[in-house]
Amino acid sequence: MPAALTSPDTGPIAGSRAHPPPLPPMGSGGHRRGPASRSARDLFEQAVHELAEAVTSSHPYDRYCGAHMAALHASAAVVTARAVPAAPTRRRPRSVWDLLYREAPELADWAAYFASGATRRAAAQAGLPNAVTDAEAAELAREAEVYLGVVAQLLGLPFQDGLPLGTGEQSAAS
Image (tube, one colour):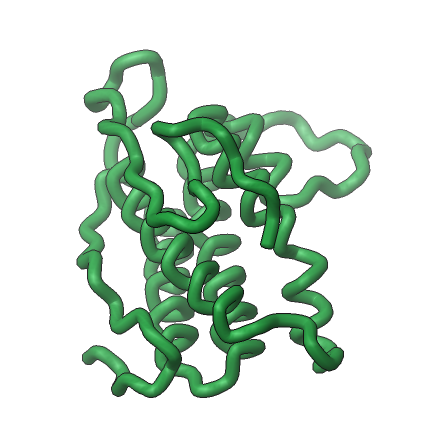
């Protein structure tokens, strides 16, 4: 499990469910620029779908990977909504977590939390033994659900909290 991130009001807290702070109203400080674009909405919907599938999976590797990918797609939605188009340059590719940190600094703790799980996700995807435990998969799924709620609020999109989080034995929500 990654070390606890210490920001009490913006990011995940190891061992407990994070409670995001209220976000600034539309237009204050340039944080929300109006309704999310179609591509941002599509990425967020994909994230919700991935998380719903992840939490109903019976294998911890699938739950962990699905929850991590849901967070990645939700972050991509934020980056898509926030990024200002710039002239193309030849730079090294950046991870979505780096881009999220730059485009939405208020989500920096979330970016660090999910970035720290990327290696574990890769190990789980490769099927390496003992890559992820049931408890780690459950924790990541809980945090991903909270994070999707934060992103939905930030983008002004609907999100129903309360996906069937558990050990993966619950039936899929319709």
